Length: 168
Image 1 (tube, helix red, strand yellow):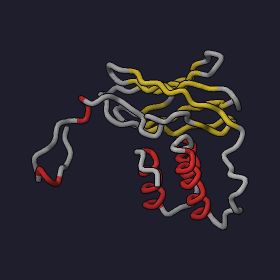
Image 2 (cartoon, rainbow, N blue to C red):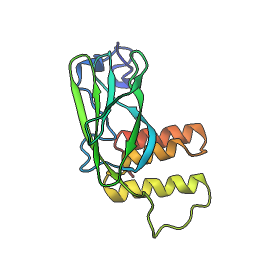
Image 3 (cartoon, rainbow, N blue to C red):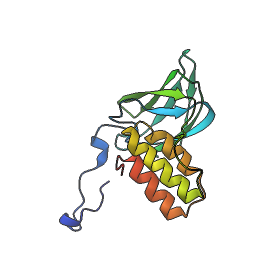
Image 4 (cartoon, one colour):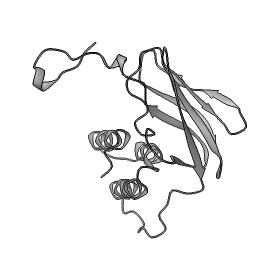
């Protein structure tokens, strides 16, 4: 399987399956943060070779398997995030497991930020908070933006930019 490279014209590049599995929104982030509470997390990853598995492991050792469509590089997992505690998110492919420690925190809000006018204003505040945090809020920001009433192409552009490390 290859993909289009404008410099190579129609010649496909090598498959990304030979690259190591990773979750860009969590990769190289000092301390990923999520707002406490019970929720379903949507997770996207890149590279690796199917089949994929997704799992969350709570601080008490309880494991929850996620749902991954056959061969897809996206999945969801139901978690209970506790403030002040960490949980581990694991994504595995046919040969490798990557894991990320994610920390629960009471609130995402910036107390100095004005009340958002609409969902576009809220999205702007979320992106600013992610940028200000150096990426620690990236995964939480993606989860929140997915719930906003934004034009689909704008929502996709924002979540892709955040998930792949393009923090403004």
